[in-house]
Length: 520
Image (cartoon, rainbow, N blue to C red; front, side, top):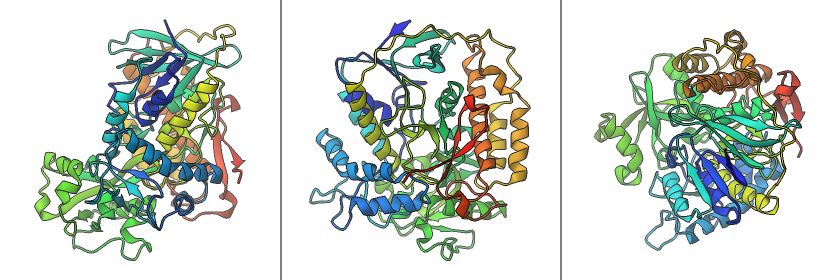
């Protein structure tokens, strides 16, 4: 057993930002499921949104964030986020992060969907995430110990419900125990529970499932953002084609060359992501192919090296200026419910990044606010822990029951297929009911109070995928309207009685979701 002051589960941008700013007097352990740089953050092609331009202000950024989030956001959390953004970008520059600039050395500001100003800061065109991650790692002090290939499968709770550590398994399924008064979940979202996704292969909803099993509150799980443009070949998505491509002038067309967003929304190809994704999905369901026409973009390969490499790897001839695309699961607006510093409803347990629901995204995340959120909240939590390091000693150690017979859970591909078909971009009561009955037939709740020590990483991963799928499905059934990343064909419009209503889930509440009014 290894002891520390802080345990961070995950190695994405939020985790690294937290570790970077924690006091050097603290013993910090970072546990990552694969290796240090393998995270959604590293592969993030979008940039950081910040009101830096001469005509821009944090208030305009605030308004765009609320509009994209269908006003389900927590206004105070959004205002704090956008006000801190310009100083954050300046701090990254001072730390040596190289962002794209013009010939005079001024930051190049891009424009993406739902932004009414050019305010997106990029690094290396479409390599922003990679540049920031690689910029933060050298700044990690010597008090940070990194353990790779550690799959965290249990949060340790004492008899009064406080979190005091984690259990993990290595590549050989060998068990390990780590204890600390502060445990931070920053494991990313849950994109891999869908068959079409931009997420890396490790993003299977682990943090959300862990927190739910431990009794923490989760919020907004029905809101899944489907990115409109993933490279699409032979019925499979191959990787992300960043929204910045449309920001530079690319347009979506069908097989006959007709622009499909022309009469759908005033912002056309830069409409909010859920609107663009749903429109593409409608064409695909009718058997039509959709393409990004990049013919208007000069020096495409220089501006978008990551997208270029992806297309070449998959045999796409960019000289034809057409990239076949389809929407896929990209970002979870919901997650583990936290306060303004990342504290969850379980003492000693914190959450950051996409794993958390801070209230800033509402029903649909504004483009390039995710890296911003990770960096802002990572630093903010570090400041909180530095002032409140925690030193509680567990009041007896709550032990799980003996391992029950592991239920015959379905294979990953079947979980992904049914989630995409029944709880994907377009949902209905019938499909959601079918999915809920299917999920509950496996009785996964039998594992909630059972020891998982003897199960393999692969078995636990499927259990966590099923648990997270259940959370999303239950919330989607509860919200009888369409809003942001949640679209119900049987309730196709926003309904006034659901305005400002948030669905909270907590296992100790007998697995029953309830609504809570969002505070202004």
